[in-house]
Length: 412
Image 1 (tube, helix red, strand yellow):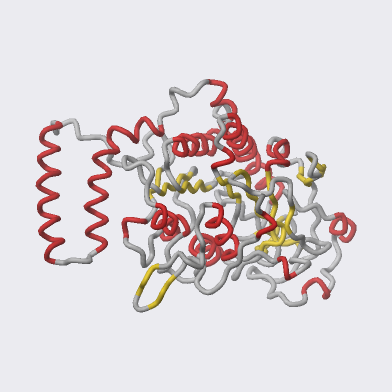
Image 2 (image 1 turned 180 degrees about the horizontal axis):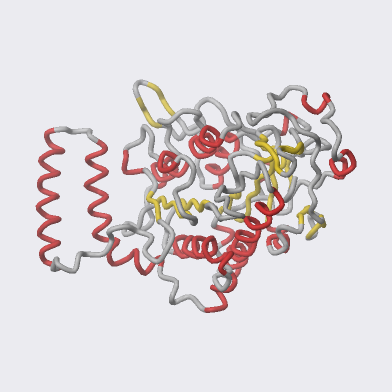
């Protein structure tokens, strides 16, 4: 309700109690009750031939409105960060299921044997909420888990050969390690953790020559760097992650997940979790991501990569249309916005809508759950979520469990 979902009725009713009719059928706040209706203070405008609404928090991204397909009827289960982020990534509410990226790695393999097939990039001072469990391979073999690239000039830890070790010595050490691991593997066949560790050593050895170049931005033109906002301290962190993501796309990495990390706002390093001080929080976070995301879409388009690259913008949930602490919003699992671009989506289309105040999905038949999103993403990668099977403990497991439907209206 502060970025994409313009609600004139919310502005009209601001300061009033939430009418009971709008609360019907939902479990409300996890944070201490329902506050009064809280209107967005943003200026709104329609953009492109599609007429998509954007607030003034996203002026650069708004210029790409006709490249995007919106899902304004998104729903999830739970309204706490750890649970909802886990569901966003794995579909499950408990640890143990593979992430979507792991399923895609399992199904499609790698297009570049010298780089990981599944990479996670994040900016900010710490890992995303929940950490590595969100890019876990779950019950799939461990080799399919994601590889995290950290912020900064050296995103891959321990990649460089120690100065005290000669190339030949490193090769001898790796050969010895391989021999010992093969002996261990023979003694304990089927140990996927060990097999993944062996492959990780082999990949790490190859990455010593390929990975530094893949994440090195020095060869990019100044115009390209500026397109992603690398010339501004506010946008540099996220822009660097997205520019590295584009370089990884060019080098055949199958699945790239980029997480918008914490940015200090008045001493508060929470993400977009604005229970208080929403104006300053969202203002700074939106500025940090707006230009880089717009730059990514423009760059992919100009290089002829957008049609073959599916871009998905999402979060674990949205924010309520009622206020909290006077200046913030609570978690909203009942109606929020996601969007997709490129990759054969129906650009300019908007699927579903929320009610008049932006609190929950208006037409439940158009509600899009995480499993529906995953099924649609898999479809665009040429994968049928009903036929992508892995046998585990006597069960035929699939990414969407026994749920999920492809949102066909989103497809071109």
